[in-house]
Length: 259
Image 1 (cartoon, rainbow, N blue to C red):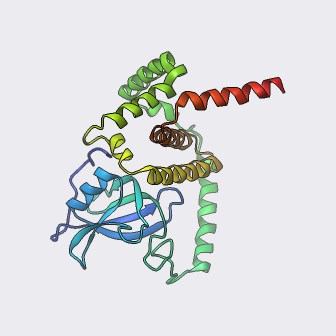
Image 2: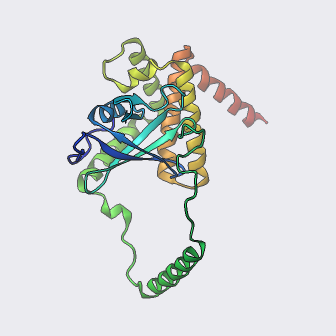
Image 3: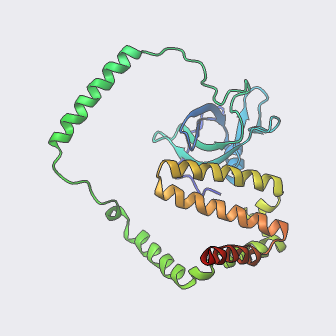
């Protein structure tokens, strides 16, 4: 689902690697777990977080009994290759105590030291800004030639088909629903059932809303696509024609034009 993780993971002698689980939206650290190769593979194949339970000595799905599952958005590898950072969308509290994070107890907080550090950092940033004369490099210039070529091709294809893109995606979803493809993530989504798809739609809607408030342009685009795709999945699952929805949208638009 996520493609191959670059580099070899350095598992310990017991075949485990520590994984820090972090909320992909709020950036809050939720828990620290252990994963083995089987748990990692199940996570990447399903998109749900799987862990290795050292007490039971077996792999298990997070929220398997409580229902507080986690949808994995990405997995990052530490440069020493001996730890993972797993970014997730939690569907309920992360901790078995009912708290959103397992790190809910404050052990020590050095307010005075923190204030002093903040003051030093502010002075340092002010000094750096006075010394900085060269402009920041254009982000677009960092895109490789291959990426630019691919982006150009995608843009050309989209411009030729943009008037009908929703219909084409909806038709693809209908074909996948009628003829499931083994190993296809799209086909697997139908197997989840309408309630789970609707739940994921709600999660993506909240994530999109948060992205809008934070003015994260690229994330807004990606989350909008995720939301639209799940919406189309539900339409297909309910046997509702996309044309009926677009016709109703057009009717309302026409009514506004008359008003």
